[in-house]
Amino acid sequence: MNDQRTVKPDAAPGLASPLGVALSEIDRATLTMVREAIDTRRVRLAWQPVVLASDPARIAFHEGLIRVLDPSGRVIPARDFIDAVEARDIGREIDCLALEIGLSTLARHPGLRLSVNMSARSIGYPRWMRVLKRGLTAGPTIGERLILEITESSAMLVPELVVAFMEDLQRHGIAFALDDFGSGYTAIRYFKDFYFDILKIDGQFVRNIHADPDNAALAAAMISIARHFRMFSVAEAVERPEEARTLQAMGVDCLQGFLFGAATLKPDFTAQAPLRKSA
Image (cartoon, rainbow, N blue to C red):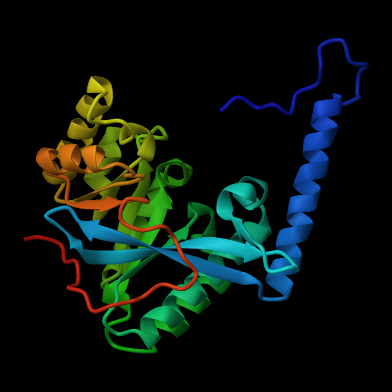
């Protein structure tokens, strides 16, 4: 995405453009809002089901999507604040709270498998590791029911660090998902080292896939990559029955999107068969 925070060519040296000033003010307001939400514990996870493509009535797992609440209780989705916090310490705090909520939910619902998003920037963050270690002690199956989702762009910031981090936690049964695959610039060679358990195909390649031969070809290639590296494939942002049928015919393993359920703060967690890595 092009950076809109530029100085106009004819602006005086050292003077930001009106647009740049406005965007900076928006960022500051966003950071203040998120800071207050963290301090008052107005942070939640909204849960969205990920269903089996072979039987969409069965839920493979739920993804926890971070939300903050403003003082009036209005839900603020991640897209409205994540860019402003991602590279700052406050982003690490968000990751810690998301993990804490996810682990406590796993402890309360022993039949569930859940995924929680994190940034590669949180690898090595002491508080994040303390939250994880404390949460894993709550039950013998917590680790094997936890999936950590790392976006493609985040993983490529420090690929070698991500590889070592994954190897360590996979020994505890924790699974990893490569989120938004296709939206970044993952070097294919890293697939030999990463050993992600799940590959999530970015929604831009899913939209209108039944009528878009380019998206169909790209999604088919991603599903083939997942299959070759023995990863489960998940198609994101599935909104139309035609998209789902096309993806099912391609052999995708799981589907996620509004067609199967919107993210909600009050999910109806039901009994479900756990998703396990194939032999």
